[in-house]
Structures are given as C-alpha cells and as structure tokens.
Length: 212
Image 1 (tube, rainbow, N blue to C red):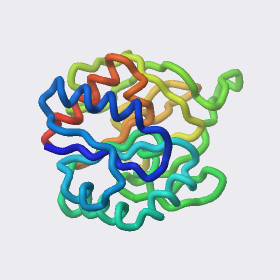
Image 2 (cartoon, one colour):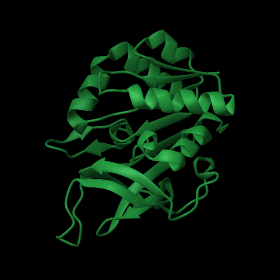
Image 3 (cartoon, rainbow, N blue to C red):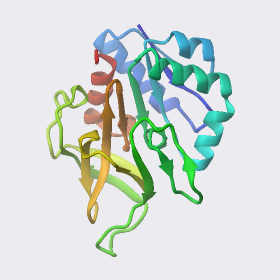
C-alpha cells in the first residue's frame, strides 16, 4: 500500500509527513511518501492533499502542476482512490472559494469557502487554537473519536457546505464552523491532524486503514 502526500509547493510538509509515516507503521498501512511525481500519484493507493495559505494561491499552484493535478483528479474521480484534504486542501474540495477573489475549487463537495463571521464580535478571526468537535454523522474517520474531543485549527475562512449530509462534523465558534466534510471516497479536515496530538493521530490512522 502506498499513500502519496501531494507536494504542490503549498507549504512545509515535514510535520505531516512524519505523522502519517508514524501512523502507517503503527497500523501496518504501508509506505507514505511526499511527492510531486504525477506517475507516483497515479499509482498511489490513497492520496492526501495538504494546503497552507490563501485559497486562490493554493488553487493556482495545484492547477499549475498540470500533470500532478490531472493524476490526482483521475485517481479520485475515475479510480475512486481514498482521498484526504487537510486545511486549505479540504477547502479546495469545494465548488468555489471567496478569499480575496472568486476562485473555482475541485467541486467534489458542493459549497463555498467564505470568511468566518462569528456572532460574538469578541471572537477573533483567524480561528486559532483548540476547539471541540461536534460529530454529526457516522464515518470511519471518527473511529475511536467522541464528540468533545479537541483538535487544532488555524484559519480565517470556512467551508459552507450545500448538502448538510456532507458536513460530518463542526465546531462552535460564534456559530457552527465546518470541521469535517466527506462523501464517497473523499474526506476533508479543516483542522491540522498532525498538530492535534493523539486525536489527530487517531484520525490519520483511521484514514490510512479506511476501505471505502
């Protein structure tokens, strides 16, 4: 089994790489590589798309790596390979992003990425730090996870999902903020699992052993 963490120059992937490699060893899930090689992405058994920074910049970088982008889309859309988006990588699953400018996403989960607007004006944006999950749907990514478990966020925009069934979990930050989305063989996490200690590692392990 091979898991490819897609490197499209979206940020430092070192901590994510180490967390995924650790959980692959613990779960017997095979090899984890960080790669920008389209052929390797095409052959991988599962894919991880991280992302740090602004939605338009990440979208442009991803599409700018045309061979890599095409291999990822084919693997997910045609081959049904398990896919995990993290932070902006999760937001890119949306129909459209509205950060600075209107930018098309992958369109895998219908919805828009919009600025967080807490009802409580005392709450600062970006939403930064630990927050507790409110799980809305059963999914293998939550195996061993319970509502109230804390994970680590750093973001100013969030995914406003069109179909409520595709929002699997949220957190409360002056109103509901999408934390996990998913459908079919795809799942996305707004928070950073590699920074979320034992809960994040559990979810990484769950993805690596998921058989959709």
